[in-house]
Length: 567
Image 1: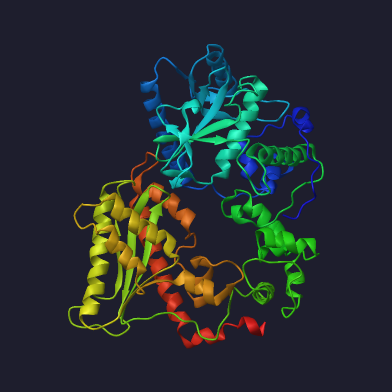
Image 2: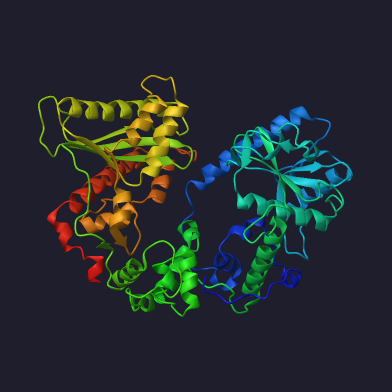
């Protein structure tokens, strides 16, 4: 990120009233600034992620289940802090449980660390022999992988003294969990609730993950980050930096973090504000992101124009991972000329077939896949008995997750494999296309696993065979391999180059999440048939865009797209 090096320190927290939670340690520094800058209160922001509410509800349900199991197993040790009420009231209730030496404190709110500028709470505090508490998180993501070496206890015995090396699991890297545990450890020490430094549990913290069957214990003094740093050392450096950034924002001092496009921007509420600033200055991160942009700035390349002016025949001024240096220069030159795509090769290889199906799946966050849309085309001509060309959708309008997903998925699977088998039986070739197979493959396999044994549900092996076949074509991979894309590689960015336009001016993944909430009545209102029709039209346009893209890439019109070498 293009920014000044901050003076690291926490002294400003108590003076300015800055109070940060653990999330800032994995958050973009510019976002931390904007979150605390009172002068940008009315600046443009992105609409909230429509699937966020569902993810939060799923996470809360997971926590409630774990809490109920622990409460039933350890009633004499159990103390619960009410979930409602102000943070101060909840911290006071937690303090009462601590004073009573409760063995397990659920839904704990820690006292605000005014001097350190910290706030936060833990799903569980566990009292350890010798006195003091260690934090345990309950999260809805996976925290282990198959392997060995993770330090675990059964979830119903969340006591670090009983932890043993697990012969079946290894730790999955989850930096946000480790940094949050370090944050809570600092808060426990500030409150006087932590074990003594001599206690073997002094630097331990636990995490219960999605599987919910074990607690994974981390030694925060020994978990090594790049450069051999422990988690506590890494956390202290990051948090002190974020305190400096937030304090400068609150006090109106020079900003310690200026905009730069990174991966987090895709879901950041401040992206519209940052995007406008970056575009106004033609910032180099609009073409190269992350560490590449940081590296280029160290040698004086701050803008897209400065990048475009470099000689592609020379060695790059700094190492740039990812694209080849000449491609990076071509991308910058395309951006300056307003070109969305340029070719890397004269002819773009796209497999074509006698019978073609474009596929697009619609899901609602992590909850489920509610629609499989298909567009059937016979480039080789229709034969007697063929299904007619056109769009079809296999959907459930029961709110996901629902058992009715099994029906719609089974109908989709029966249809697409029937078309495939009929084509092959008649001596014709078959191909099915999607744009970015990661999502479709996940729900293809996930649906086969979730609904195994139900009518029409294929075996996982059958689905994997379909995915592995050459006839399943990911057009995103084709674009990624053979095009340079100056404004992104998403279907909504690329298909217009092929002359395609969505009928709905608001078409997009996040908006479709909002439409879905209305379509199935998730917010307590009656289901809205108009939004169902809107989703069907959106899905139909998505598969039509996929078809338009591949037909364009294999037509003479592709010759009108400039070659990167010519730039």
